[in-house]
Amino acid sequence: MTSAQTSGEEKVGISAYISLAFAIVFFSGVLASSQWWGIFDFTTVNGGFGKVVVSVTDAGDTIKTAMSNFRGKGGSGAIDGFMFALSLVPTIMFALAMITVFEYYGALKAARKLLTPILRPVIGIPGTAALALIASLQSTDGGAALTRQLKDAGELSETEVNTFAAFQMTADAGITNFFSSGAVLFTLLAADGQPAVPVTLGLCLGVILLGKVFAANLMRLFQIRRALKAN
Image 1: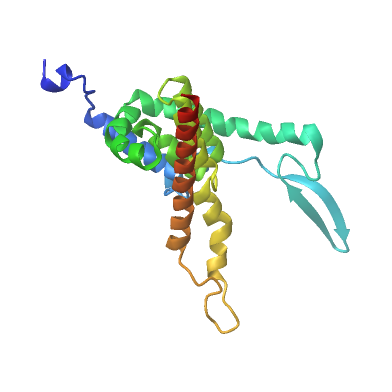
Image 2: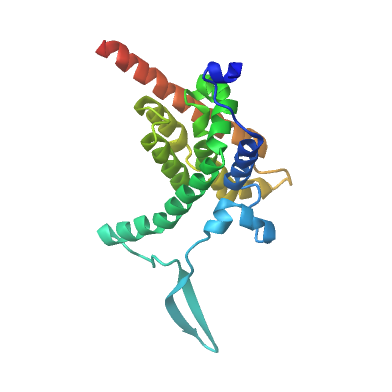
């Protein structure tokens, strides 16, 4: 037996690292596009529900239609809540299916070996949760689904799940939401021709990530204090 085997260290092959690299790219959103390479991006492949007509207006020689998504427009109460929940099902099922494929090829083993020394001291979670972390930056639902799977598999303790949830729910899906709605602010110009937002994209993303790390560590401190009181 080798020294690595006798010490209980888990052996990780090159295929596991390749699987991890592909998983990171797949969930990161860097390949999000309507071009052919979009098939390697989680959000692009996951797609979206089509539009439905909610109203038709006769404007003289033309007919104008107002569109909405499959939930329609103006819903309320339990029915609208059910329709919203239904829209989450494909994302969660697809995310779980993909993480199962990546796990089969060793991605989670490689993540645990590479990233535990980083994630453990920074936010108190093992490297196994790296894919869920990356997914949560692009899709709140996908990140939550992967986190639940890790908990059910015994990869995350209750304390780690609480800490990780604090990280995820602070500016949830921060990267996707920021670039899809907030990034447009950086194209605006003031009356004097200067940028209306006098900071960079990178600085704003840095603030989002720092906020997530701060929230995770705040939760860690809260749980440590609660444990000390219990003892």
